[in-house]
Length: 200
Image 1: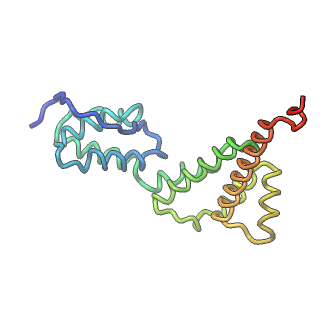
Image 2: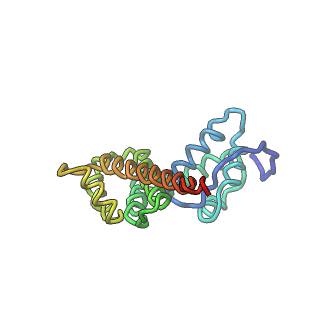
Image 3: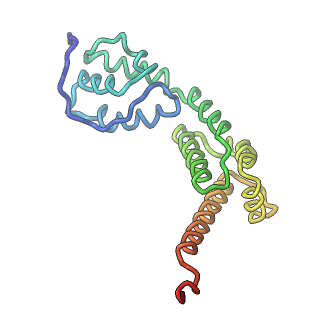
């Protein structure tokens, strides 16, 4: 039987996990790739890595387990049961999409909104949740969050065609690129002095 022990492990760059359901899948994938599937490590060593990367609620979930080879498997099972069940994760992803803050017409604000939108959609894809199962519900939600001027612009470009979520995402990305190009042009114009200054 293994006893509590401290092992000097090589440094690994791993994310931390505190119990946020939205980050469980990415944390688990990273941990599996770097630690869990490493055949050079014993389970007790993997357990030490695991405990080092858990914080807050997630750390409390396995705090009663002693550091042993056998308990590593039990720890992973406990965490996966609490945070890894798809039906538990999908709801927070959808709630986060609903609660996305409304962006302004500023490039950085709109870009940040788009990045978060894409991140949550990718998270749902990792759970094998297809866009066509929720896209029609999400389109009006996302559209209502966009600034009025941007909403008018993409609606004008899109015409009378029915929106799909992929179409809306592409339209937002196109608008971001247009704003960025416009900002770059303004900076360049402001950096060039009026021609008559050369003759002063």
